[in-house]
Image 1 (cartoon, one colour):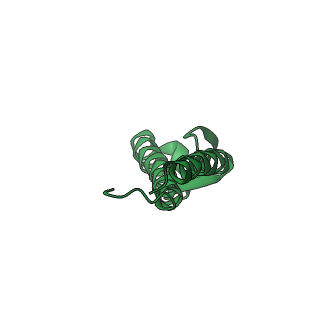
Image 2: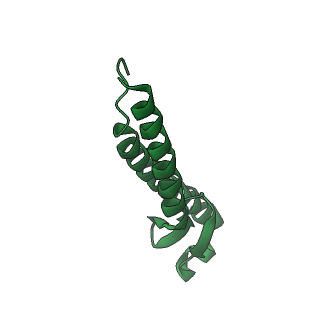
Image 3: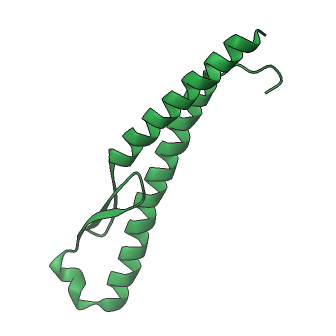
Length: 97
């Protein structure tokens, strides 16, 4: 493979990864459980928490539901990040990799 072509592919991949990371950072992901909703961006920063009134009366249940909803949102962020970055990395054709 031509070294100049490889360098150009690597540069393009860097640009594509940067663009993908910016897009992911701006996207909002949602996790929910028993009516509780947590929204976070692609940087794993919580943007919004919506707790139904009926969950306010049971502290243990609220804690469990918060944990589940937060983990659901974080899983959605991580899954999307892996998929999108994997798609971007496919464009770099390095022999033996």
